[in-house]
Image (cartoon, rainbow, N blue to C red; front, side):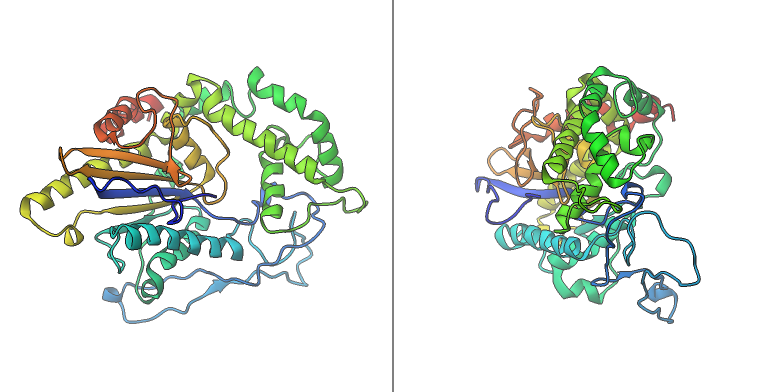
Length: 423
């Protein structure tokens, strides 16, 4: 998806100095989730062109023994009579594919071309005091992070231990995973599985499409996973097309195939769903997103405040910003839902289903003349437009306006979220 890239990057006036950057983007292209595969897939999916490494090693200061660079190699045993549901082959479902790994490397390199080569903001070499990477507990985000970091800082990161920040699985704010019953109850009134007319109307309109897809793909009409939303069909079909694989045909009747027109209809309905779930269902969408993603928003606000403090402290002591201990670049790798919550909270003017690699960037600037701080938000590499009149075009907005907006929704330190979520 479009992201910050040197050829399209909108530079700001020289009267501003970049002080802090925080990036969050959806992981890159992958195999489908196993739950989104059809009961019988017409062809296998092989991933022999990559290796996903899984190993533990003692920290250098705690032991001299070295570990082997072990990776998982998927295989089927001739003595195992069980056949996995869905795709056969040598992939995990999901895993970032070879193409997704290459896209991840390119994404990191594009960011480095802008924030190091064009703006001179990122250090030449990776410095954990200035740059950090964060992932979710889903391993596909770590698979992406390893390539993004390499695309940014090259072979040097392969020669050192490279930390990826991750929160405990039960309270992870990036995915997110912390419980919020109030948000779930709110969502149940209009979202997936609800009887809200705005939701059920598109499912009824898609009944003939569903019938054709089910008959071709072997999905039972009683399978609720496939029929409470278009998510499963969307993921399955889009993953194929992202990897130049043919659309599926019926296993018993190969002449019956999903057509491009049918796939396009699924994608249009999927776009409707995300727009409805995160923007078009009215105030309920904002309430749901704030409850579900409010902690990450509070963390972002805190990071911005810390960056302002660190820059001011550096200026008062006369130290070089490149050696200041304050973190200046944070990179989060998350999921489509993560990006959707942010777009919802910022009330993006036009909501879409965030594709693989979709990116939101928060840039904090200090103006040389008045010494005040301003924020710019980039969505898809360009300035984001919000339908909220307080935010408007998020281009050099006084940072206190955005921070006040966030505080009003979630409170500083997310102090409003435990009460809202009944934690």
